[in-house]
Image 1 (cartoon, rainbow, N blue to C red):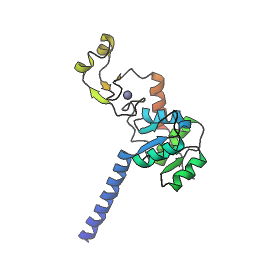
Image 2: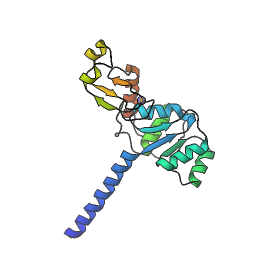
Image 3: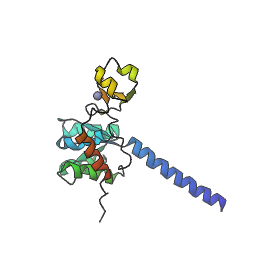
Image 4: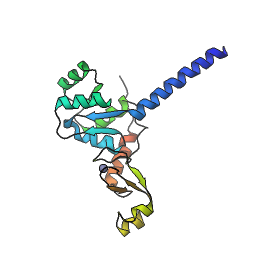
Length: 184
Ligand SMILES: [Zn+2]
């Protein structure tokens, strides 16, 4: 009995770890028609590669090479992704809030979000920056006002609380507290 239980427990742990890894490694590539969806996934901290101009072939190649889930509203692209073995999610709505909601629900990401942890331009995770190091990179006023700073290792942009408008913070709260859509 004990053996069976521990086997079961092991199975549960393995499943749990698989889920954790999947969330940690979950990466998206977003069709160029869905810029706002890409932007908001990045604001919420998710890895969402986006190009305002990219050929479908290149989109599929990148998705395949980097193990990214393709997000698109293009049926033709969905079919090509299926044929090429690329994981793809057809985005139902034309409205960005519903689009973000669909992705969060589909991959159970609503409580995995880390808002403002990623550079929206570069899709790179920000690094913490000490106040001492921020000293030469921001104005004295910002240095005095802000408590925490972060640096994009790619573009060198410095972020701090206050970088984001109150309006953005309201929207983030709204998105994350939306009730998950009940599956029919
Ligand atoms: Zn950047």
